Image (tube, rainbow, N blue to C red):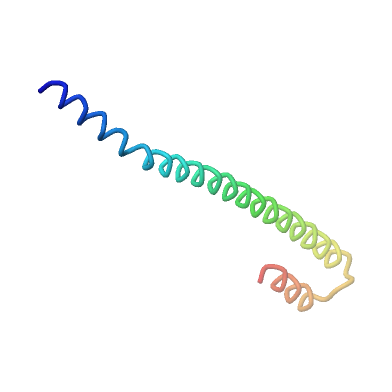
Length: 85
């Protein structure tokens, strides 16, 4: 009887081997997807940082032009609103 139980237990594990392969592929797919998702998020963060830097430079130039009197107050405020829209 103990022999029959051992063979039944072994048979149960042998039946699960294909599921192990499918599970391994699923885990590998999730790891690869997570890698690409993180890379994409990093790219977006870099793009946002570059846009912020460009906006800060534009505001700085606009402030300088207003201080020198090259543009009127209304134009200054309009352009500043456009930069932050």
